[in-house]
Image: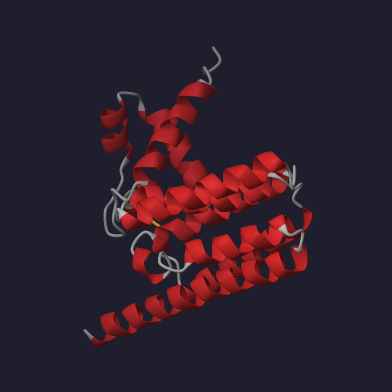
Length: 221
């Protein structure tokens, strides 16, 4: 008798639910996720949960320790630097190659408007969601699905550190986005690319400095 395969839709649902749980910030770095806990919470067997956790580990969101469970991945300053370096290369490429349609420009304006509203209301989850959306819209406008997939994965990994460092870049990001959008409206892709590069480098520097100072404080303590 052949073993039945796990329904792919059940594995996907488990993956999406666990990923949402992580990205909503409900889990800290020291919390442990076990197959038993997750299967109970989701009302399903352990097999699709195990498959979902393996996928999340492949994406770099968690680390799995045998017989212990899964934990959020802790990004080192070096890993953050590498991720932002890759993001800089891909996002400047997106600005350089995106198809600039009236619909895209209109959506970017609406996104920027929502960012400022969420920032004013101190609605951190929605603000960061909208921040990511702005960048994602530019990536989608390249019609390069591989680019979009890689950028989404990078954003998810960066989120692990960024969710605790909201104040480091939230106040300046909308202004950078505004300048990028203005340059694109003027068809000045060179300027838009320059601003995008500066934007990403600024956030990277602040985040790396924060992680290094936190590491030094933990060692001193």
